[in-house]
Length: 113
View 1: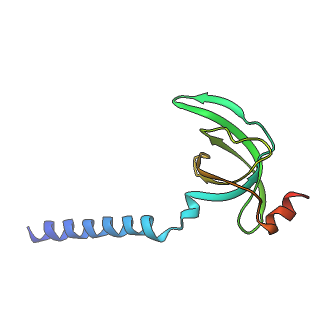
View 2: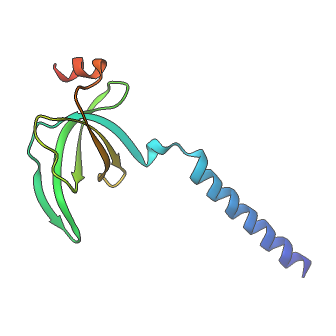
View 3: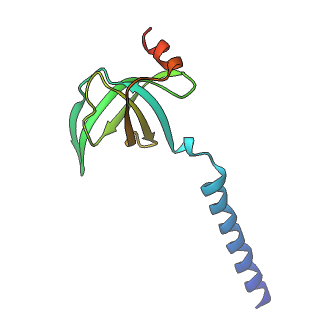
């Protein structure tokens, strides 16, 4: 009887520690990443299963100014030639976006190259 209680307490403690590590100790960037982007394309309208939106492939910049080209999906159309700060989740879906008037200075310089 005491062994069963001890085993249950041990397993419960292990579960709580595991949840704590995954929820609070891992950085958010592993699940979603913010980028700055100037939209250069109209996007391609797509419909997959229950998702209806637009697919994009754009050159994006992280907050340190590192550039890369990524593919991502948005439920709403992002207008061409506009600047945005977007947050892209691990499933390549834009979870949040904000229109910005100008890219940050360090990124603006790189985007114009």
